Length: 217
Image 1 (cartoon, helix red, strand yellow):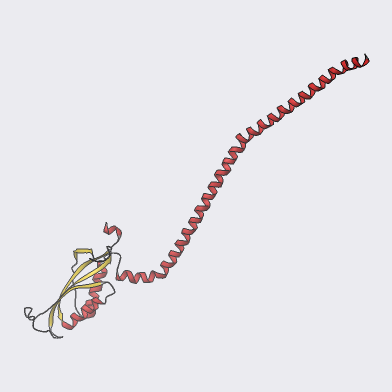
Image 2 (tube, rainbow, N blue to C red; image 1 turned 45 degrees about the vertical axis):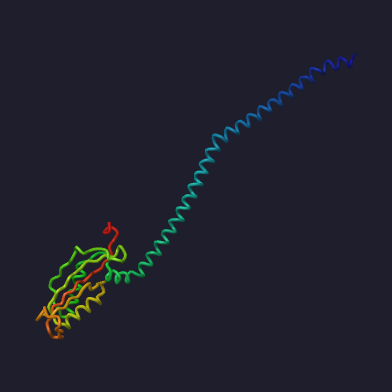
């Protein structure tokens, strides 16, 4: 009897303790679920934008590093080009005086008159055949020329000296044609002019220059 009473009195206590354990378990479950929900919320609304921002910054940094590398390479190439140009600048002036990058009619006039003065032939006027300005046949498309016809009465030796001066001029000049006649009798081709006799000498100078891309268009 006594045992039955003790069991009946202890049963509500056992049920209460069981219920308390279930309540604690439920509270822990709720706490755990809430924690996971908070972590998920934090990761989605806080960590994700931060991660995206960091990823974008890393991509931008890599892009700028690549750009800096390319710029350094270009700057290095530019420095090398400047050094190379400084080394050949003097030679370039010599080359440009021989084959200028434009017609430079004034330069050709000065050179022809100077050649005439050195040879003892007065050249007081020069005519340019600008209609004959064209690319040289069989040569590069950028190589062009114009004609300067010269006709003078002088001695045979002076004529030879003038031709020699023009041929050996620094600028690229080609004697396209040469005509020599006796001044005393132009109709007589059998007479050989002496060094002191007056002759009529005529020749056409083909003067070259390097035509730029804009001029070709």
